[in-house]
Image (cartoon, rainbow, N blue to C red; front, side, top):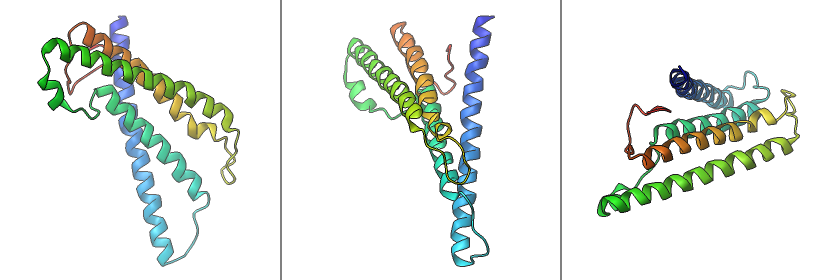
Length: 169
């Protein structure tokens, strides 16, 4: 039952990252395209344009990073790994996963501090910029969780990238 709950949470994270990133991308596309058209034919102005672009951009960057982190599909230089003996490959993979975990924890911790200290209200939308920067600690914390899972998989000998990677495996 707990395993099913974790799998469902993992699927939710995957779908949330995918669809919210797509929505952000499409919204950015429409906004940037509109800005280009409105430079040629200035019929009206888009109020709060910069604020909305900034919000969409930070969330798309963090969510797509989380999606790639979740799948274990970040850049890897496997040519060097292939040159190593199996034991050395495993040790390198553990070291890499520990470094990724450290980075994710730093991102979550300092992202939280940054979000708390932002204290800025946007001029047009009159929203707290903390909503913009909440993407950093949220995605950092989830990256740390996935790093722990990947580390556990490597230690158990179940490493290797899978396109159907899930939280539980």
